[in-house]
Image (cartoon, rainbow, N blue to C red):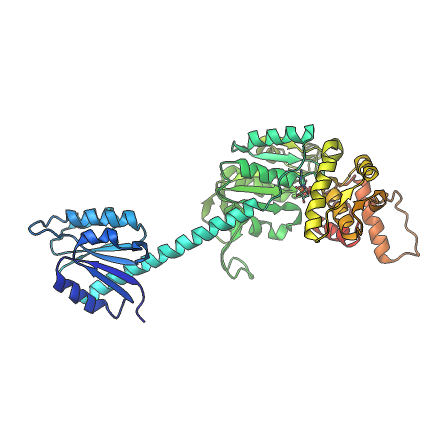
Amino acid sequence: MPKGKILIVDDNKSILSALELLLQNVYKDIKSISNPNQITSIKNLMDYDLVLLDMNFSAGINNGNEGLYWLKRIKNLAPDVSVVMITAYGDIELAVRALKEGATDFILKPWDNKKLLATLQAAFQLRESKRKISALKQKENGLKDIINNNNRSIVGNSKALTYILKLTQKVAKTNANVLITGENGTGKELIAKEIHNWSKRNNEILVSVDMGSITESLFESELFGHIKGAFTDAHTDRIGKFEAAHKGTLFLDEIGNLPLQLQAKLLTVIQNKEIVKIGSNTPIPIDIRLVCATNCNLEKMVEDGLFREDLLYRINTIHLEVPPLRQRENDILLLSDFFLDLFCNKYNKKPLKIDESAQKKLLNHNWPGNIRELQHTIERCVILSDGNNLTTSDFIFKERIKTSQTTFDTTLDDMEKSMISNAISKHEGNYSAAANQLGITRQTLYNKIKRYNL
Ligand SMILES: Nc1ncnc2c1ncn2[C@@H]1O[C@H](COP(=O)(O)OP(=O)(O)OP(=O)(O)O)[C@@H](O)[C@H]1O
């Protein structure tokens, strides 16, 4: 089945006819011109797959310069089109010049039909590959845009937040590794995204990894990737998060949850700036900007022998501490309104207002779960509300259960709920520590909090 579009340029009409005859069953669309001046007036030259271009047009001049001139013009107008040069006066020097100017290949007249067809076929395949690469590049850029812009703008104008945002902007422009600390739900991940978006790497992607949810057995495969056959389930090659973040930013969330043995592996990669995939011996150079976050006190963990001091030095060239919501009083109502709009839109509710006494209640609450807690509180209110106003009775903050005593006339679910509440309360909203105490992963803890609406 003929496919593809070819343009033949030769001043010799009988050559044009011979070539048309030869190529008519190979290419779907053939256009021949005998005067190269017509090239520039061809509409949509970019749509052509191939150009077969003679090198000499003026009588008595056989140095090939005309062909090289027209090659340049074609490459200017349609850079991805494959151009194959054809001449009766070729030598190696001319062929090299043509290839340097962007020709795909070079054929001598009189030509051998089989060889000519094979050369054009190879040139056609090259053009197809370029098309695919360009389509993939466009798709990649589109995906990068979606990934990078899929973040919420940071709401708030409190002094504490403004200070941290100024610092974030300053730091973003450098290539320094950044450690973001702060309680759960304060917006550490949002700050990491801002660092990426304000950095010179913002044309590449930010890859996030929750270190708290990666099991030891999957650590290397997730972060460094593997090659096909490296282990039983490795049916295909897989790139790890480090390689995916190459040229961009790698965000390692909950870095404090990384076991010591894995800290050593991470340190090696950061120091050597290269990874080795499981099952391979070949190191792959990696260029990433590292941003880490944690709600743990890493210095204290270093003192307790739970975190490597050398790793801490590597990751906290710059340290940003995100303040808790209770220290950002000005932000509470701004954020409440922001989430109110967001969820009213999401749940197709008419606009809601928070009345004055309810506002006071929000301002007086301690927000141990910070902005995430505020977000969930507002979402719940929007879902449950029937009126136009939210009043104090819409905002019910559960008292944390102080006692760990449980009675035996409760259900298993009640006991679990109570244990989770106790653990969260004991660790003052630090979900990682609470999950640790309960012997479950942070993700499982989140799921349970959601399930029990805690
Ligand atoms: N200033 C802000 N403006 C708007 N939304 C915010 C702001 N800060 C945080 N949020 C939202 O609050 C939620 C929690 O934020 P984020 O995940 O960044 O916190 P975190 O500190 O990384 O939490 P964790 O320690 O639990 O991982 C997210 O949905 C985030 O979009």
